[in-house]
Picture 1 (cartoon, helix red, strand yellow):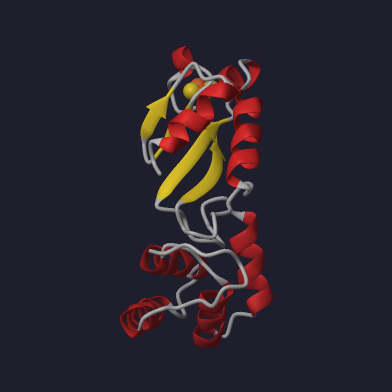
Picture 2: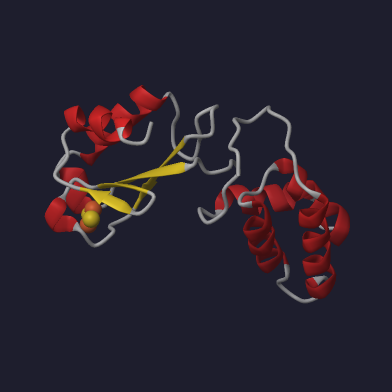
Length: 164
Ligand code: FES
């Protein structure tokens, strides 16, 4: 899915909308249905822009403020789409003490985006994550599941260039 910064028009398809309405009609009225509805909506659209939250609110009668509150509170929900290449920096303890904060800052500087955002061309999105079980390689970052370890900030431009 093309990824756009906030403020660019959301474009969902009729199929996506129908799929969301079907999910809601199946779950509506069940206790605790909001989280599963939001999870399915994210599966359908890839993220939860305000337009999708509004659809959920309209269909369920749950106030938009409540849906927005849930969407922003839980890390599993993304308010912005992911990039073609999803960059994730491990900020777990082992990586952090080995300087993953500097790797992260270098990415912020080079990509011009920060946590949870995506570049305007849709190419890269940036996130941080907890320990990914590769502490021996600390500090670690991943791009679409590919692991890069023992990094210094100077390694970052060369790695990003592979994805140009
Ligand atoms: S803390 Fe980063 S891989 Fe374990």
